[in-house]
Each structure stands twice: as structure tokens, then as C-alpha cells.
Length: 330
Image: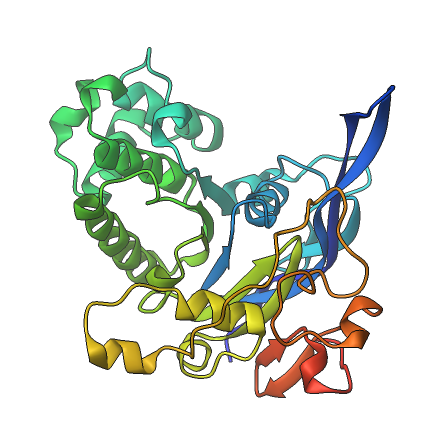
């Protein structure tokens, strides 16, 4: 097995916000990420999937250093991402890069593409020839050299995202966080961006955390898949096992709702599962299992105790009382 370059243990991120009640404002706590643990192996793609508000992007921002965790520890290549003085070593800033969902908002519209790409180069490679490095980055992502002189508003959405990927590569990272990198793109362009990311991973030996709400996208991309629901991971396993043998009721519900175009594909899907209630507010998550308001297989214990991960088979974990005695993931 490859080396685990990222280790996340009991990660929590809670936000205290003002809530306007009937008579007065009062602070409430939003448990955006509420105690998750996972490892990321060198060279793999971990697909982190969940509905809006499940906490996926919060995890991305914590790993990128934009948020500090409320609790838990994160080690990258054995180094703590969050030291006591709050400063992240320059080495970690180079090694970990993020590609955001909206490429238009992540590029400075007043700067040319060359100027946008030059910013990380000037910080992390001051001794290098900036022009030569910029040309190398454009060639790496299959963009012509003429794009150096264009502005972001002259590019399509797909081209902007490709430039954003090139900028993330400027520091020669080993780990990239992809926060829904194709969700803002046309379907015809998504495939081009995905193929580029897969080629770059192979050529540059990159490790990906691929965040998405599109479960079907993970079938041919992810080495492993993790499903999030209201700030917690409810199931994680190898990609092949995940799609062939989903265990958690929420995972089965998601997979059964994926649209297909043939009867053969329909046979591969789990039996249709209909949720029985509404998604709770992250401000008022119910006691016990957070999925108990929607789960068609809920039991009395689901309203009282929040289950830990159970190892169902090798490297396949689910957080559900259906699997009996709980066993924490290592």
C-alpha cells in the first residue's frame, strides 16, 4: 500500500452565528464538520461526495489553510498543518494547492493570464525565469502560448478553469484539493477538464481530494469514495466496492437516484429508496444518527446513539446501527 501522506483525525469545524429569534438575537452553533477521520494515500483520488451543506467545502478550506479547525488534528507527510503559532510552513503552502468551483472569481480580471500565473511563481520561485515558467505551465495544460496575453473575460468557462489548474501547478504541489472543479462547466467541457486532471495526476504523481455532489462522476475517477451527510462521513470504501456493494441507507438512496440510459445500467443500481422526511437544519441536528429523520430503515437506537464506523469488509466502513457492534476506524 502507498504511503499515507494525509491523516485526518476527529476533525471538527463549528461556526457560531447570530440567529434572529422571535424577540432577540441569540448565538447558535453550526456544526459544519463534526468529527471525521480519514487517510489519503499518495497517488490516489479520494472522492468526497455529499449534498449542499454537508461540509465538503469546509473540509477543503481547512486543508487549504483558509479555516482553522475547532478540534482534531491533520498531519501532512507527518507535519502538523496547524501549529500553535498559527503559521503554516512555506513548504506546506507549496505542497498543497486548491482549485475552486468558480474559475471566474479565482482569477483577477484586471490581469492577463501571464500576470495571474506569475503571482505564485514570484512568491515560490523567485530565482526562476518567470516567462519561461509561465510558458511551461501553459504547455502543461495544453493551452497555446498566445493565451499569456489574454484576459480572463476573453476565455470560456472551461478555459478559465484550465488556467486555474495551471496556476495551482505553479508551485509543483504533490496534493491538490479539487472543490467541484467541473460543476460550473457545460457537460461538453467537463470531460476535457477531467481528462486533463487525470493526465496531470499520472504525469506529475499528484494526489487528489476530489469534492463533488455528482456521485456518478466518481465511478471512473476515484480510487476511494467517501459520502458525507450533515458534517460526518457515513460511508467510505474503495471505488469498485462502493458502487457494487453500497451499505449505508443514505448511500443506497443516492446511488438509486442516479439517472441511467439503459436497462442494463438500471439493473446495477440498488433498489429504489424513498426518504421519509426532510433534511434537518445544521443548526439543529437531531440526537442519535443524523440521518434518522429520512432513513427508511431507522430503529429505536438510531434516535438515541450516534453510531461509529463499522468495518464491513477490508477498507469498507459505514456509520450505521444496522451493522451491530461499532468499531472505530483507525
